Image 1 (cartoon, helix red, strand yellow):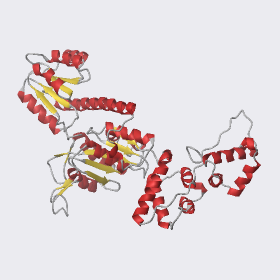
Image 2 (image 1 turned 45 degrees about the vertical axis):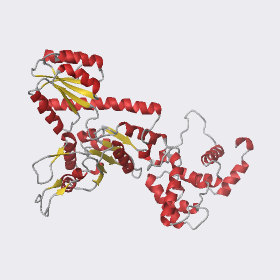
Image 3 (image 1 turned 45 degrees about the horizontal axis):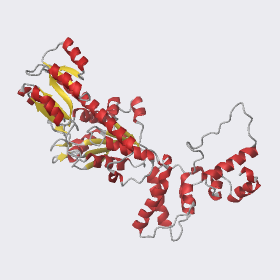
Image 4 (image 1 turned 120 degrees about the horizontal axis):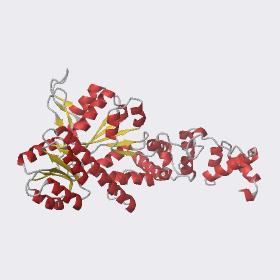
Length: 472
């Protein structure tokens, strides 16, 4: 598992000048890249690459024994998946183009382009991470495996789309990049954040901050902390949530509600990897992975100017969308059993027997509050239960009128369309079709079928008796 080395693969610095190796290592470490290897003798580089998990090479062009150009060709030939950035003391366009043609990822002048070099390293690291994640994701999907299923034990599901989410989370577990969790309220985004943290293998804690409603000052103080005397009432220094999450994961919930001014601070934190506690002029390095969640559509918000575009693209490096409960109907039975057991145990009651009609009733409800709403329904039902079979009346009352039931397979209230060149069916034919569809959805349960089409159960029974046997 992750031992807080970043990136997950090594970055190899090859240069015959010890002073440059030292200074470049310091610069990279300040930017959060601490998985570094150094090689001062170019003759040893290939053996080091064969021995260690190298993913990116920073290669000096002018070296004794084996030149950078010759070493570049060897690396591209033997390890084509490795990224190579060529460094030179000379700004020569022809040489740069030649190195790129040989297979280098990029070319920089090391004496004058430190800022551009660091940005080039960031891009190269991200490209390598994407390649490794794609390989890992493809392997997991093809084998349909989960290597750490116990991590997801707290998420009750048998849905295939949720299993795909778990496989994706395992494939990005070792990444240090932010994770954006999106989905409607009540789908369990915090459970997913906990799974991300556990998969990362980090030794620190998962620290959760709900940023909804925090103004700019409170947001900065909550995340960054402050020094004594930073503002009126700051009688002593206080560590921020970032520092408390060191070595672990910082989970920012409801990120879509963050003000524009606070978004700037978060963007700088993610881009530079450093922050200033209030009242301090000395930066601190962030040592936590950032996970954010929202029920809002950030893409729409950034198009309307309510959410910064640069922050949006920075957060969506790893993005996972949790499907709503209405698209995970196969989970209803599992979740209902689990919540009823949980509620019965908490209230000191025996778990009731479920009426067979209940799962069918719930399947035709859209659950706008998702898993959270189902749990609340289960607890309310147990609180009113007195013994024997669980009353259907409780759920009918809690779910409200028939208007709460979904009337279409995908979207509530979806209009029925007719082919413009075909004759319209008669009212009798439409009624028969409606009855057949209601009985199909209710799996033959007349009580539920009658509720779905808004008639009484005796009226439905009468219509069914009138239908010819061959039309049933």
